[in-house]
Image (cartoon, rainbow, N blue to C red; front, side, top):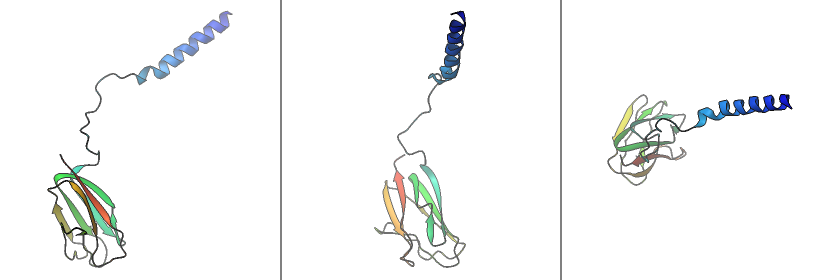
Length: 124
């Protein structure tokens, strides 16, 4: 009986020790309702005939810079006509600043087989 009591005390102590660090103490990180990946500047590489990453998120007033890492020209052309890089030569960049929230789907107007990509712009 005494051994069972000691066993239960040890077990209870272990549970308290194990879960004691799970209490909510201190302050939680502040959230703003914006996606964690939203930033004022994002980069997209054009490589192997793809946009990478395929989706970026920026805050209004933020910009995206595309870098052509392929050996041929590409474009970053919005399907709704909001921006068009024109030809981005190999090793060159194009930068665009987004002033309105929304989702912008774009493609390479030279290479129709390339998958479309998106820029998501959220209010800051």
